[in-house]
Length: 451
Ligand code: TRP
Image: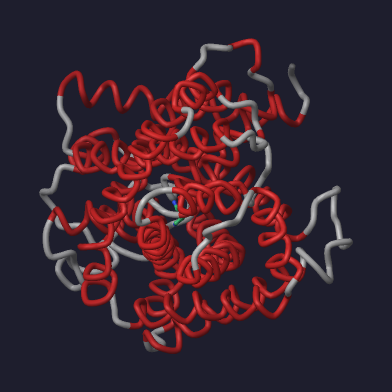
């Protein structure tokens, strides 16, 4: 153990951990990314594989990553070093933490730009969407993407919001911000669902998302769905490991992780249904891409009673959800800098945010001035998304599964995760066999070695 238990900050209660971890998990991934990925990947085929990945890979790895963090009592790099030392394994396992810290900074860079869109739309919602039709909304979104200063301004604003909270510290800042906002977000998503049922085409949305269509499953759909399962649960990037390291001994990891997953998956599915109900009622294109929610939901706000108020509330709450996720992308590298190099929390946060902010500038420009800059056919935004979601996260996840299932002593894993009998064997068997084999097969398939 790198430091005695109790020497580090801890969450004030089990509920605090559930709240902040759910706050990390629930974010743009649920409200912005899940619907548009479902739309561009054929609907139900994507949803089916995504749900399978949540159950077979996501939940077991969420537990494993939390467990490694609590056992290791440190930032991702030092936590991995400490659990590897305890297992008599190579120090090289620290690379899991390094991949996480680098990956989290890369995610933050584009996450912040997209969160900036949400901030921009919050202001637009204050002005109201009344009288706008789908062409107007398409033009509104295109105008935002074409304006580097607007994108960079909001990106900067979002980064500063995150900086302030993370400087406030783990329990002071991060915990407090989550307590009210997550339940409020849930309430407004339910409201939108109600609108979808009452005034839009919910049966079409249900059919699109849940119609059983296994023949539509292809290798790219599977990789996209697995990557998204990682993204939405904040897996593999050290965020969960860091939050787990602040978790008190004696809290049941298995149960808390189940709550978090149910909340995360529930919000994504509800958001998806609400959005597609509007998409089909208005004859919009489900495969519209990253602008999907910004081109659909304002139509609902333009038409529903009190739509102005609901619209503003919605964008504010999504911005908050993104905020509580952004925080968790900064904390791993911050903890690393503070604990490894002994620098103060403030300069550490400043360094992390500055790096992510700088890369984010390139992301913002990739929608306009630099849209022609491409690598492997992808612009900077798509490249960072693909690199992190489809490569770094599954890679780190694979290593975490292998470590928890094969390297760590079984008795230590059992003791730390707090499961017994059949429940333990189910988790252990999944982490040892199902998750790593599934991740490896998906990788190989995509690389084209098989299939
Ligand atoms: N899970 C968040 C979302 O869905 C994004 C996120 C926050 C994240 N922290 C992470 C993704 C760590 C990967 C790793 O919006």
